[in-house]
Amino acid sequence: MSLMSSLPGHGDMPPPDKTAFLLDFDGTLVEIAPTPESVKVQAGLLASLRRLRAKCADAVAVISGRPIEQIDFFLGDVPYAVAGEHGIAVRRSPGGIIHRANLPPVPSAWLAQADALAVEHPGVRIERKKAAVVLHFRGAPDAGPALRDVADGWVASDPRFHVQEAKMAWEIRPAGIDKGHAVRDLMRAAPFAGRYPVFIGDDVTDEDGIRAAVALGGIGLRIPRDFADPAAVRAWLAALSCGGDDTWGA
Ligand SMILES: O=P(O)(O)OC[C@H]1O[C@H](O[C@H]2O[C@H](CO)[C@@H](O)[C@H](O)[C@H]2O)[C@H](O)[C@@H](O)[C@@H]1O
Image 1 (cartoon, rainbow, N blue to C red):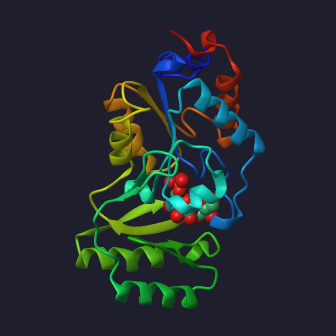
Image 2: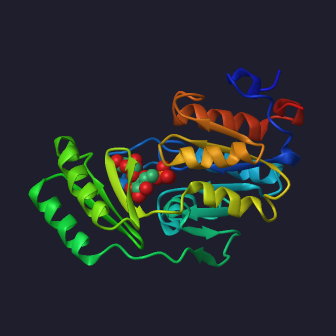
């Protein structure tokens, strides 16, 4: 029996020479932490991902809401490809150029208002990205609804943007690009092309990646439906990375 057949609702894993891993970062490979900077990367995770790359001829990518530079900080050169900002930026190979979608910047008036909200609600953190702004309320949970009202007001006045629901955060970002775009982009070229994408995620933004992987004939796995938590994902990746080809299914 393959490891995969113990996961309900999914068939066997494709063999290593037919599999591409497309992995979310926060909440999937690493546990959610109090702040974006304080996540901890397990040494065992890096070793597993390296072994998976060797087994799958490099077809291992991370697709995150974070900027690519932050994924580089946490994972170094371990993933072959990285997509950041929910698919807005894609680096298809190690050290390769970063392809950025041409999208409008967040209006400066919104950024100023976001900074004022952080002053008004102690504990709220503002994270600026090149084409987005995130209102984090993990440090001030009661402020969540008020921040959402403000964000909804912004996007109502400018339909080029939408509010992405995240974990204890609202992200205001351009509409039209999502993690599904990153999946389709990466799967068009080597080393991913011709393989079955296996996307693993935990959040609303990952649903786009999961749908895209399934539409391409692959598998979409989600915490908590298919794995209890990131530790279970890491254990599964470790087992696959160490197992013989018979571990993977037909
Ligand atoms: O697509 P992901 O790799 O899952 O990234 C999603 C967002 O993750 C970060 O925020 C979330 O994780 C933080 C660390 O655990 C946590 O403190 C915060 O409450 C979460 O919302 C990151 O800061 C965002 O930029 C990413 O979009």
